[in-house]
Length: 365
Ligand code: GDP
Image (cartoon, rainbow, N blue to C red; front, side, top):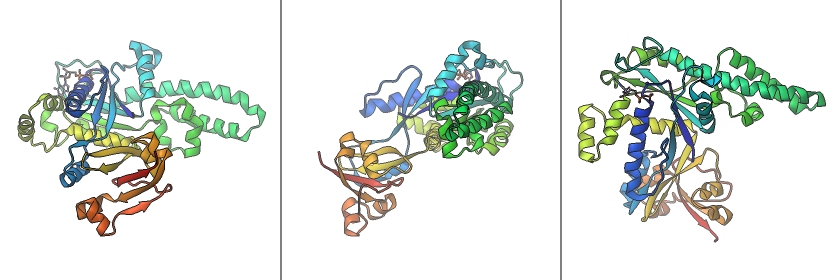
């Protein structure tokens, strides 16, 4: 599955956030699916109100949302790139994830230890960024040296690769992240084997105190201003409250608790949806009486590839797909009504599945 890793300095609220995720995940899993959760990996449902609306119409036996994996990458400290505090292990963990959720402390509390002096969200972000950049510099430098040797062969591809590596190196040396370079697809391919840490998409969690959870505070504002040029999203939330919501088992208790804090849903839901978008994922649905289910695909996938998410045999034996766009399904209310209204399309192998499509695959076994 696709993974997002939670990173941040010590005592910023990472474990609290991860607890909220994994407690919710366990509660969800016990309903209908077996799922193993490693100590630092939570498999979490992606909330999608489109699935809920389809279920209201179809009234299936069960609904199955799509999921993503959240990994707790604790232990990053200043000096991690030099191996400080098991730093290399944690950096290796970051290399394996597809996106980063960077938690930043935006609350004051003198009882909760902080090595870096007064609360400083932008400074904290820079500390982590610097460690990741230093690690990327190592990776780029190693490949640069190899590529420089090969350039004598006169291969134009190698020469182009060398240019990309030099650009990356200079950029990192200026204390900037690779994702800000907006490399072309071609240039990205030249460094894809490096799995650079600062190339991974990122979003920030501004962990604020309870009075600021709806409004933000001067710390979260400073963070927003600092990341605006990266185009990164900042989610303002209170991780402790999220953990408390997750811990409430009774839905009525949950609702009451959230009402007290003037919340319409857990901020965690917002975070998970934002992470799903960050991973550049799309959803299509199947809507039968047995189950209404959300399936994850990448943008641009054709119908047979999308079908393979359900079963690999679906791709091999693909004949055609019956497709109803989400809005049509909601408007007409059922597959049969869509068919009668001419809103059910028959699509072939070349059809590019759209976000929200309700699909029915026909295939040979
Ligand atoms: P980690 O080291 O980043 O994983 O941080 P933890 O999640 O273990 O949190 C460190 C401490 O801060 C714990 O005592 C948490 O209860 C506390 N904490 C987490 N979030 C908040 C918050 O929003 N406000 C306050 N005051 N304390 C928090």
